[in-house]
Each structure stands twice: as C-alpha cells, then as structure tokens.
Length: 435
Ligand code: SDX
Image (cartoon, rainbow, N blue to C red; front, top):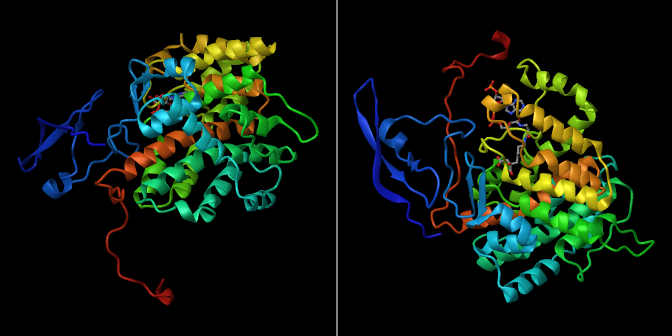
C-alpha cells in the first residue's frame, strides 16, 4: 500500500508537571477519524500510552474494510456490504479483499478455479481427527487441524516470497472450508465427504457437510445462496480481536497457517465469534416471550455475568448493517424452507423490547451480526456448536487478506506493546531455609 497519511496538522501534548510540550503528527485516512502518531512519544517524553482494550488506538493502516459505527456503515474496498450481500458472491468478495477489486469474468473464473483445486487436504490430515473425542467442540478441532497445516505445506511457508504468500492464501481459503466440513462430519460420526470440483464454493461446502456416500445429494440452491450470503457478511471486519491476533502473530513472521490458527482461537470467545452459538443457547434458555423481562433484568445486573448475547458492539453504536441483512434473510430462508422456528419470533420480540429499554438505548446496544445468524444456520441443519466454525470459514478470507496487506508493508516490524508495571520493586533473594 503506498498511501501517504501525513498532514501538516499536529497535536501538542504538554506535561503539566514540567511544562514541556511535544508536537505529535496527525494522519488523515481517506475516510473516518484522523490518528495521532504516538510512535515517538516514549523517546520524546519517557511516557507510554495506556489503552488496554484499544478503544482509542489504531494498530495499522488498512485499505480493506471501513466501518462507521455511528452511521452503521460497513464497506469492503469501498463497496457497501448490503450491495455485496445482495449482488455479489463470496468468491468475488474474497478476490476483492485479497487483490483490491471485484474480479472481471476472466479473473473470477481463474480465481474460482484456483480455490476449487486447493479444496482437497493431504490424506494424512484425516488422522489428526481420530485423536479427538467425537464430542470435542468443533472449534477445538479446528484450532488443532488448521495449525497442523503448517506441517504439510513447506513449499509455501516463505512469507517473503509473493508467490508462496499467494499459494498459502488460496490454500487456507479453500482448505479451512474442507476442514470445517470434516469437523462437522467427525462430530456426528459420519464419513468425510471429499470436495467436488463441479460445485461452487458454498455448494461444495454444503455438499461436504450434508452429503453421505450412501446416496446422491443435491444441494438446495436456496441454502447455497443463504450460505454464500452468510460467508460474505462474515468475511472481514476491520481490526477486530481475531484479526488483530492474526496480525500480531504475523508480525513475528510466523507462517500464515499458524497465524490463522491463532485467529481461530481468538474468534472462539463468546464475546466475539462464539456469540452466534451463545445467542441460540440464550434463546433456548429464555424459551418464551413472557420470560424476556427476567433476562433483560439479568443483562442489566452488574453482579450477574449474563449478557444479552448478540447485542452490543465495540464499534457499532447503531444497527450492525450485517444484522439487518441477516434479519431479512432469516425470514426468506425460513419461509422458503417452510420452517416456523419459534426462536425467530422470540428473537424479534426480544429485539423490539430491548430497543425500547433505556438501558440498551442509552448504551447504544443494537443487535449485531451474531443475533440472527444462528437462527438461519439452525434452519440449514447445522448444530449450534458449528456456528463459530462457519464464522471462521468466512473470516479466513479477511484474516489472510489482512495478513497479506501487513506482510506487504515495507516497514513491517514485530508488534511489541509495553505496560504499566504494578508489581513489587527490587527484592534481595531469600534462600529456602530463610523463607
Ligand atoms: C463480533 O470487533 C468486531 O468487529 C467483532 C465482530 C466481527 O465481525 O469481527 O463484529 C463480531 O464479535 C460481534 C460481537 C459479538 N458478541 C456478543 O454479542 C456478546 C455480547 N456483547 C458484549 O459482550 C459486548 O457488547 C461486546 C463484547 C460486543 C462489546 O464490548 P465493549 O465494547 O467492551 O462494551 P462494554 O462491555 O464496555 O459495554 C458498554 C456498556 C457496559 O455497561 P456500563 O458499564 O456502561 O454500565 O454496555 C453494557 C456493558 O455492561 N453491555 C451490555 C452488553 N454489551 C455491552 N449489557 C448487556 N448485554 C450486552 N450484550
């Protein structure tokens, strides 16, 4: 990326104790808030900044995704998420994030061929699954098998080689989907289904998840379209926790397979990608509309760890645009499938009541991407424990695109935050007999 953020604008920081001041440069992006460059703050003032959950800290420059939390805007390389979800495909969005623009017909055909012909995994990978209990959480299996990919692809681990970086990216996008399907099959005791090269990415994924060797399987086009849309909506999301994990791992020059495995581990948390599973479990606990007030009271009670899962977001202080798309899709998929899932009505009533409640309104807690996704995934036949795995299949595109953008930065340095030390000051060593 050759973007020059520098401006002639500065922030002056004054030490009130000494009266010393330091001028800090201000950077402008193409959209969104400006940033104060504090890289020289320690050398000029002897002070670090303190921002433990990065509420006011930018970690990088990036051209992939722009979010305006106040306006509920999400764009990938300038394209609004609603347009991409409605008019594009997951493979087109993958090309957009990875290479910078939507593909033309030839580029799309070539890219889809590349990904398709990387969907098979080394046959030895199958043996990793046998070490897990059948009731292992699918995300636990994914953490293991994705990290294991580093052991197979020695010919694409040189992160300084653009061709090897590209092959690794294609392998991860393709193979994470195959491994996710294998994880599902393993957890339900069914045989793995090999990928099929005559199917699109999302058709192939559903085939590998739901086909059995005993009979032919025809992918339902409604489900394939819904799956593709869900993948698009989950592809990338700026510098979220799991993407920041991938970037920090990548800053040490770890190989991309290991970096994506680290991202999967971070995504698993119920505050992050694990929320889609937690939403379904929460709806199953609430069970009926008349119990909603009881759970809203618990969500507001600071002594109760219960949170209204699928609500709130660090960045969105308006509707998450992905939730709006998913809410519409929910209706369509359930109607197309002729399914009447009482959880949808319950979720909509919960949303209605919560959005009238001052606690949620004052804190700008709106439904996020995870609030409706689980209901669609359940209708499609996925067990709740697979929901975050599906999130990981989609987010692998964002993770590896962000990783590629970072590695291509000429000034790549290892990420190494500092701290406010609050432990004991110097002590003399005490021998065991004297303790
Ligand atoms: C994802 O970052 C990304 O981009 C993530 C993601 C992506 O695509 O990568 O968008 C995907 O992770 C979506 C978020 C999924 N997580 C959940 O739905 C879990 C429930 N949500 C909360 O845990 C919370 O809202 C977070 C983690 C999402 C955001 O946490 P923040 O920004 O640290 O907000 P906070 O905890 O400081 O909350 C501010 C206030 C607090 O109350 P006060 O101290 O001001 O009184 O709002 C309250 C919180 O207690 N609050 C909630 C709440 N979320 C925040 N209260 C009840 N229920 C909730 N869900």
